[in-house]
Amino acid sequence: MNMKFKAPRGTNDHLPVDEHIWNFVEKTARKTAHTFGFHQIDTPMFEQTELFRRGVGEGTDVVQKEMYNFKDLGNNELTLRPEGTASVCRAFIEHGMHNEAYPVRLFYLGPMFRHERPQSGRLRQHHQFGVEIFGDPSPEADVEIINLGLSYLSNLGLRELTVKVNSIGSGRSREKFQEALVQYLIPFVSKFSNEEQKKFKINPIRILDSKEKNLQDIIKGAPKPIDFLEDESKEHWDSFLNILSSTIKLFDGFNYEIDPNLVRGLDYYTNTVFEIQPFDSRSAQSSVLSGGRYDNLVESIGGPKTPAAGFGSGLERAILNLMKQPEYQADTHNLNGPKLMIVPLSEKAKLKAAELAKEMRRNNISIVIGPQSKSIKGQLRYANAISAQNLLIFGDKELEINKTLIKLKFNSNSVNEQSVAIDSKKILDKLTPENEVR
Image 1 (tube, helix red, strand yellow):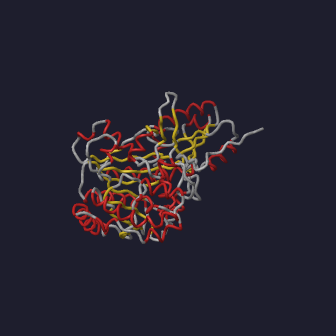
Image 2 (image 1 turned 180 degrees about the vertical axis):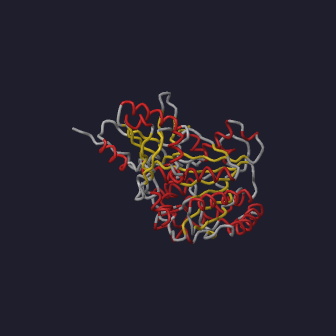
Image 3 (image 1 turned 90 degrees about the vertical axis):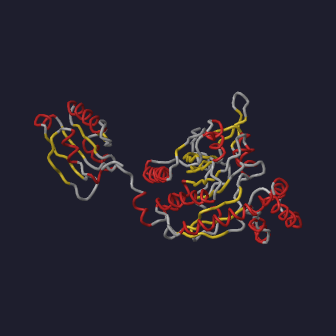
């Protein structure tokens, strides 16, 4: 019996046709982060399970039912990382970055893993761009993070986005809000599902993040965290809004609104939380970027008290939104073919083709030598199939006179044949700038 293997449910293969748009999004993320003075950090794809229990929160959906947990041969409990912030905080502590000059600015790019119901833009293995700023407790740092996020999305070409913001407070203000929320929810607990009742016992605030339809009216009438802010949190919130309202004006087609029910799905957040969504969105699943402040997370996993803020943005979801932009649809579906394909017609020509390819690849030029198992016609069909941008054909006769024809813009409707010496520098001069590999 022949078994047909497929990618596991909730995962995708990134095919060559997707290369252009993925490279564009990742390059834009790195470039934007660098312009804000952030430096890249890479952490392992799996960590000790306890890191996420303590960091993300025992009562969260992520820890309760979405993590990929396993034991290695040494019987150590490990987990494929479901998000990036806890791992970056662990590395921040382990490598003594808390002893560096504050603030410390870090960003990451990589795959995350959550066992949840796959849907558009939400996969079990998804890729995330995230930034973290450590050591700055100010509302200016919160806005800087949002500014970076808006710049990234704007640089991608996304427009008409809304920044939804809220403050969930910290310390005593958080306690007062939770007490009021519990008193409000108690009469409704009998209507909760077993899962929601469990959430209510572990962390009542998680109820506000519920997606169950029968709870939405209850959630709308619930107490709002911004109504319980103590002086320090209130001052932070007011300053944040003033700075944000000025910053948002720098971006065309972007606005912000206060969403008093926004709490985010991870327990480590304090004070400011935010999500960026398309204008026409009515679903939390459509968020293209989200984050907030987490002043207690570093300390909760064994580090010193360190104020911090950051965001995460799913690349798959950003790409889905990017593909909706009409001006990008044509570009993102085109596979970049090699800049030059060489078709050697003899044994000597094969050696010369290898020599030319080696020399031109040093100039970051993509070169393909035609597959010798195919006939000349077959190689020409192959050149068309791979969208070769230019074509060079020669054999012994051309080698004797050191001259042949190069077909410029081979994969277009304006093919231009020109005579050229069989010399790497001369050939490079013939290759038009607009065909350069990027």
